[in-house]
Every structure is written in structure tokens, then in C-alpha cells.
Length: 386
Ligand SMILES: Cc1cc2nc3c(=O)[nH]c(=O)nc-3n(C[C@H](O)[C@H](O)[C@H](O)COP(=O)(O)OP(=O)(O)OC[C@H]3O[C@@H](n4cnc5c(N)ncnc54)[C@H](O)[C@@H]3O)c2cc1C
Image 1 (cartoon, rainbow, N blue to C red):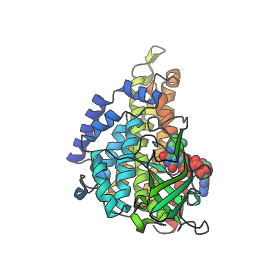
Image 2 (tube, helix red, strand yellow):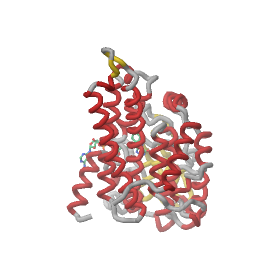
Image 3 (spheres, protein in one colour):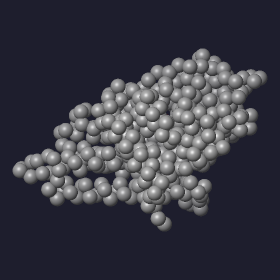
Image 4 (tube, rainbow, N blue to C red):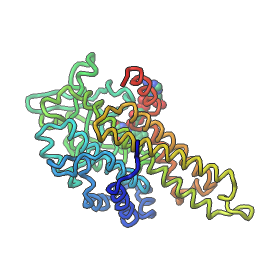
């Protein structure tokens, strides 16, 4: 098995690196973090590179479904700032991937060209105040009334609700007894009457601010049932469909991006900072830390691009993507914390980027299915022969 880059992926990575250096300087990344701001003008310039359409088939105006390339974009953007990489995921993956997999033909024709142009973003409205890992127990209700759907309930930690075009909202569309069957996904515009959005002051992942969202008798046309009429009561299948495998990889790509940035900064610092008349990078204990982190990161990247290759080829990869999410997330957390240690006291102050990498990295094992949930699934699905 060979996971080395092709001339095309190297070209894409180089293009992204040039974009990041020019359009996303370090000072700007620090400012987006402290202001919890989404730099839409940078996002628009990113769209002009043509990378939004990497998840969209050519017949709908995209570049073709290419999961490996999508991961390269997420990784390179995350290496500088989640304020751009998370909105990219909201566009190319939350909107693009889900529409390709489960949108009705009408929704694909209307919305996929907008994904490719960079003018459509979905926020995920899955989690609720009483619902975390156990998503099948959502309480937000949707009722069909003629050609309308009425939604009541509340979502929590809905990131990017304030900047998205639609909240991809998991709702209970029938009897609670039949918990896996009676779920649907509906698309709700954040400015629809009856929608209220309140920011949550979270530790990291600034830019696509996370929020509480309430729906008070929100009425939407039935055409906003995801998947059209055929999608009603199909929410669970949409959630556990192959889109979920790619979703785990998106988080893993954020992890390798953040960890790469942290390690690069720590490596540089070790060659700048002197104590006891020696560069700290001359001490074996620091060199071993750097070597261990480089090894961990290399392993995480191999897992990421191996699993992304499988997803590209539509191979079954539920176990591989869970192992990748678990390993990359825990590696990123460990690497960010170790890099902070190498920076000593300076790793603890806002002006030094590693402080942000730590805050961002601490989220990665929590979101997109926690490490415990990945472990449960790796065991369960392996036993089941998947
Ligand atoms: C900054 C931020 C942004 C987020 N963005 C979004 C978003 O955009 N959209 C969205 O829908 N959600 C989002 N989330 C929510 C996130 O996906 C959830 O936090 C996550 O799914 C876990 O849910 P929970 O925190 O309620 O934990 P719980 O499910 O309540 O779990 C609590 C603890 O118990 C463990 N646990 C739970 N069940 C089991 C089990 N069966 N076996 C072993 N251990 C278990 C968990 O691993 C965890 O350690 C975000 C969260 C944060 C912090």
C-alpha cells in the first residue's frame, strides 16, 4: 500500500500553502481567534481556487468527488486557522457530501452548484441539551402539516449557525418508541421566523462560533425535508451512511493540521531559546520529545490518507475511519500539550500561537464522536466482521 502524494496532490498542497501564507497570515489567524470572527472575504478568495467543488460531481458543477484532496485542503487550512477550515468543512462536506449522498435530485440540482461556487454552508444541528453521543434520542419535533413542516425544540453546540445558509437539523418526525426509524433531517434557514441563536462561549475553535439554537413553531416548506419526500423518516440512515465515515476523517484532518502547526512552532522555538548557555533543542530530552511527536504525527497522517483513499474508492471503511479519528485526535491533543511544554511559560500566553493550538486540540477528541465512542465502534464493528 502506497500513500505517497501524486503530482496532482502535491500541486494542490503547494497551492494551499501559498494561499495560507498570503491570505491567512499568523497575525490574522490570532485576530480571528480573539474576535471569534469568520473572515468571509478570505473564504470567498479560497472559493475562487476551485476547492469548494472537490466533493461535488462534475455534472453538478464541481470537480468530482475526491476525498483525499478534500482532506489535504482541510489539513492545510487547519495548520493555520480553524476560522477558515471549519467553514470550509461546513461548505464542502456538511453541505456537499450530504447533498451528494442523500439530497433529492431537485435539491442536488439547486444546491450543489452553490457548494461548488462557495455560496452554501450548512451548520450541523444534531446535539441537544439532553442529547450528546446518543443522537437517536433527539427531542426536537417536526410535524408535517400539508405541504409545510413545523419544527419545535432546541439544539446545542450548533457551530456556525450564525454564518450558515441552512441548519442541517436532526428531528424526531414520528413516535419516540421507534427511535431509529422516526428521525428526519430538515434544512432550516437561521433567519427563519421562530429561530433564535445564542452564542456559547467555548474555549477554542473560534470563527464558526458555536451556539444554542431554539425553534419555536418554525414553519418550513416540505421541499426542505432533506432527501425530499423519500427522505422523511430516513434521518438515521443519513446520519450513519457513508457520509459519517468521511466526517470522522474531516476531524482527523483538522487534528493533523493543528498538530503540524504546533510541532513546527515547537521545533523552531527549540532552536531559538537558550538556557544554561545552550539551545534547549540541544538537550536530549527536548530532542526525544520532538522525535516522538514527529513519529506520532507521521502515523496519524498515514492513517488519514489510507482511510481517505478507501473512502474515495467507496470501500467499506467504518473501522478504519474510526481508528483514524481516535488516533489522530488523541495524537493532536498530546502533541499540542507537549509543544506547549517546550515553549515553557510562553506557551501559556495569548500572544504565542501554541496557546491557541492547545485550546483547539482539546476539542478534537470530543467532537465528531468522542474517543470513547470510537473505541466502542471499533470493537463492535470488528466483532460484526465489518
Ligand atoms: C466547541 C464545540 C463545537 C461543537 N459543534 C457541534 C456542531 O456543530 N453540531 C453538533 O451537533 N454538535 C456539536 N458539538 C457537540 C459535540 O459533537 C458533542 O459534544 C459530542 O457529540 C459529545 O456529546 P456530549 O458532549 O453531550 O457528551 P455525552 O454524550 O454526554 O458524553 C459525556 C462523556 O461520556 C462518554 N460517553 C457517552 N456515551 C458513552 C458510551 N456509550 N460509552 C462510553 N463512554 C460514553 C463520552 O465519551 C464523554 O466523555 C460541539 C461541541 C463543542 C464543544
